[in-house]
Image (cartoon, rainbow, N blue to C red; front, side, top):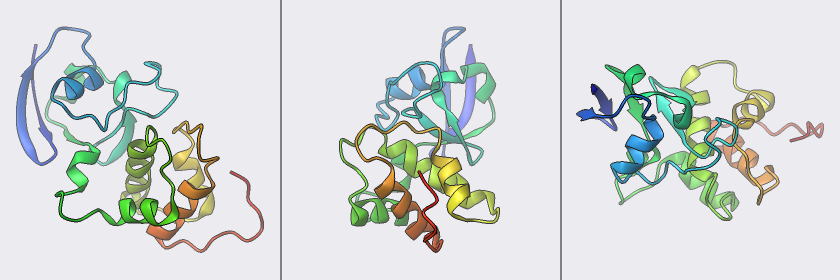
Length: 159
């Protein structure tokens, strides 16, 4: 089946077998910020933006992306400078093994684009779908708060 969509600012057309997922197709295109995690939409390692919304690429069948705008973390850097959210993750030491980091950065960006009232709870909710076994979420949350310029909740609102 042929599918045409915008990928990181470029119009692409691909042919894939019925039942192929977006994660499979993007990884076959050597976009490795999309990690192969759980295949059940529970870990967030394969997070991408579709029309600026954070989604798990392992759950998206290719026929559903026809005509859509898809962004991966590769779209956020020109290899000369980092995106502001990436800078905050680096500054806060929020990436340890790095497996969850692309998904977390895209989840923060999706929240920013929603233009909802940004607060500590909205950020934590946005990161809720990204499983991280290394950081305990403290540093990624702080990086997100900094990137979105949200004052930190001093009341101890847990992770």
